[in-house]
Length: 295
Image (cartoon, rainbow, N blue to C red; front, side, top):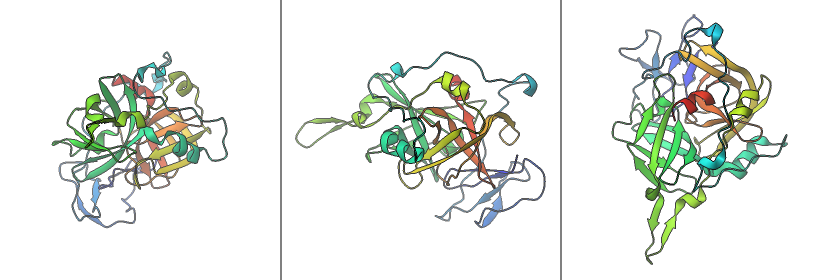
């Protein structure tokens, strides 16, 4: 597997997974990360500040690669979205699946800002008390003071309620449901949650995905849900040394700031979370089973 770059805006972290010298990504490499791997370098972000890098607590999902398989499981139904509606499924084989996903399901995406880092997130559940938003763990590397969440309608909230996975580059943020309520000048209350969507999650569909299938990467670099690209799945479950975990791989264009966004199948069902990209645009994706393991 080629070298991987984290795709949270504000840092591009190169990890050598195949040997050979380090190569840049078109940005000026300023300094090496202290206390990390010797072949780990940081690039300068547009604001001139250097973001601190590194994953925290990433480990193997399985002890033995030969015995690792996708864990079978029951379908995670949409009943988990008790208050916020579930995103509709896309039609089979649309001409522009990425565009249709944006048109119909943009309300399930968010933009996350933590310190100097900016990434994406996907609304996973709403149980009536809180929203669960899943993202890449490294998006929260600077979230000591909390993270700002921007929704599709421009509404923003701040939260310091989050959990990072021990065995994957994943994190879940929790948004109290009542924080989505806004009082207007006339005394009326607007529930911004009515404008949002939970992403469809179906583990049976995930288990059925195959190499060569059409997939869609969607994130919030340009704006919330403004970046969506179609591509193909190249590996459905493979050990990635750079992450120390089993990942999915997809050949699909992505941009900085799309870390934490979603990889979806042709019907718009979540397959995993975007974590990094190699120099040849092969995207590393934390698989759905790792997401569900956190809940």
